[in-house]
Amino acid sequence: MTSSACAAQAFCRDAALADMEACADIFNRWVDATAWMPRVHPADDVVRHYRESVFANGPVIVADCRGEIAGFLALSADGFVTALYLDERHRRVGIGTALLHEAKKRATGELRLWTFEHNRGAQRFYEREGFVPVRRTGGENEEKLPDILYHWRVEPLSGREA
Ligand SMILES: CC(C)(COP(=O)(O)OP(=O)(O)OC[C@H]1O[C@@H](n2cnc3c(N)ncnc32)[C@H](O)[C@@H]1OP(=O)(O)O)[C@@H](O)C(=O)NCCC(=O)NCCS
Image 1 (cartoon, rainbow, N blue to C red):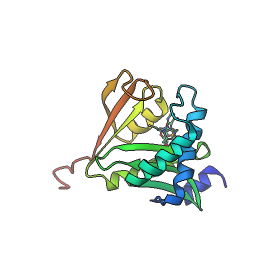
Image 2 (cartoon, rainbow, N blue to C red):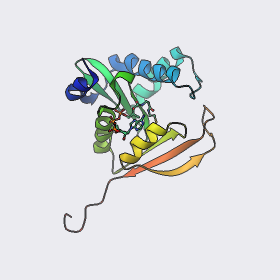
Image 3 (cartoon, rainbow, N blue to C red):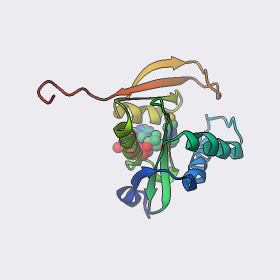
């Protein structure tokens, strides 16, 4: 199936533990394919981290395309998007936007996330989605890469609509 056909048929749902390896694999493939991204944890440790932490703490939302996981988004209890990764074959057809809209619906009015300064594509995507950069660090993270904290707040209703 082409990626755009998949986008038309993909739907967002809560992840089950059975989706965990597919999500960890999407992340591991992104690390291996991204020249500026160091691998700080072996692929097997990433799978363990997804099982014991990301999926245990949840929620994780997956984009399911007829049983194939096209991408996923992980949320923390304190309103952070802790992961948003699409399989390379399914990027730029609207699936990331659909996952983020689902997260916005579940949020209590605001969301935060960190992205690396190198990740210009992600910055364009988040800014188009109404996120604004609120803080920058020189690399206070495991990867030791400069990063940016983004914040999104739901638009207040205007006087006439309220
Ligand atoms: C960033 C990501 C989540 C966006 O999801 P997506 O499904 O590809 O994006 P959508 O199709 O919903 O939205 C696309 C829009 O976002 C912006 N955008 C998304 N990726 C972009 C990129 N690499 N470069 C420039 N703009 C980008 C564009 O405005 C684009 O619109 P266009 O295709 O009409 O130009 C996805 O591309 C991805 O998984 N990238 C690799 C992993 C990653 O960087 N994750 C973010 C970690 S913080």
